[in-house]
Length: 270
Image (cartoon, rainbow, N blue to C red):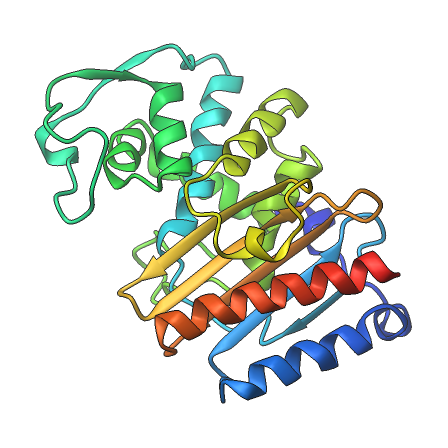
């Protein structure tokens, strides 16, 4: 059953009072790239629930963003005592993703711990690690986190829409922030994994270096680029999820950075 706390809406008056100037500012940036239907964003204050967005319900190919619910599903098995972070899993030949560089290349039939695989999957967006971990999950175990978050599961065969919207995807990070699905300790562990990533040139680049950012990026066919997560502003931590498609990759990255920077500065000025 979906956790209603992950889909809460604020009344429009609250929304307008808090965010109308920011939304105008961000839409102005998007207009510079002629990207009206090519960009979606969702921003939500984690204290009040106040939010703003543009195309926040528009679907995008999630790509590596889906590694976050996989991580959460594995940690649920850890919470239930079915596996341990220290358990060793064998890397099979069919797990190796030859299309993308991997720290596990040439390590067929060798072992890695669940924690090592989780760190590689999240911090390096390693597909080989993802393939090993997803073999440990039954379909219903993955679907459970989607149902809890109220997000249509793109893994389901009967779901023809294989996309995820910025608004929906933000619920995975909210579930971790509020510990609605995992225990507080494992939720914090998951968020720590997402703060130590190799790609720090998207959302984090628009944020002061002393402010922590928990996030996950995704790239689909070099045609879609996304970054979503939590910015731990000292007074007002917030969710931010930016998804782009059909833009030049350099423009997508630049726009994500500008949206992140403008949002942080707006919130910091409040």
